[in-house]
Image 1 (tube, rainbow, N blue to C red):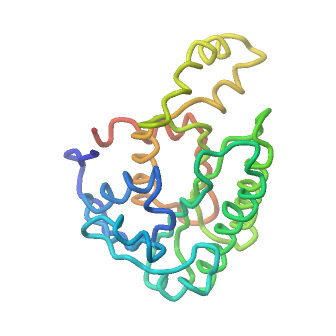
Image 2 (cartoon, rainbow, N blue to C red):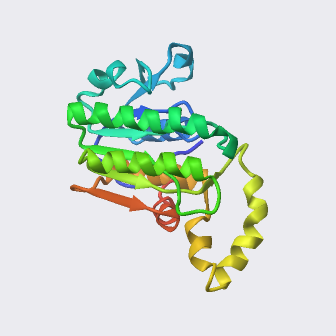
Length: 232
């Protein structure tokens, strides 16, 4: 459970979250609420029981902008977390339908209501694997840019946390990769981030939006912005 530190109280934001009942969202939303932000969560009717106390459920379909664009009106921040669970190369069709389809819907909805800040979890790239997944996320980034939205794009590679610990076995290989000039950049770009770092970095993004344009936080930036602001 993430709890706020003694950091100064932030300006209250009105946040709309898609994918808020998932792996990252179920940790992020309680933190945003604890920090004093108002949170609305897009959810299917079957998922409303997973909306935490204090958040407001919005019934809709993340793949269809018309089902939630009016409910987005009045929010100043849109956090897009929808994605295919446990990505793997065999899920290429799902990446196209769900991952890309949902961010396209969010971009359309955000554009309609003039959303001030969009926060999008993309993926680190380039990379030697997961090409279909990366292609869907890169297309999502392009949609945000083409729509002229002000946005923060976070590019993790793998988020380590409960149920997602296997990647820690790769730690020695990352350490070796950082030592070799020819592999150092890749080892840093495709490094691991913890769930706590990811959630904290998202909260920092919400509380300190860019004035305009698109800013990109890669793995080192996620680690930096997600470190020591809140504690588990």
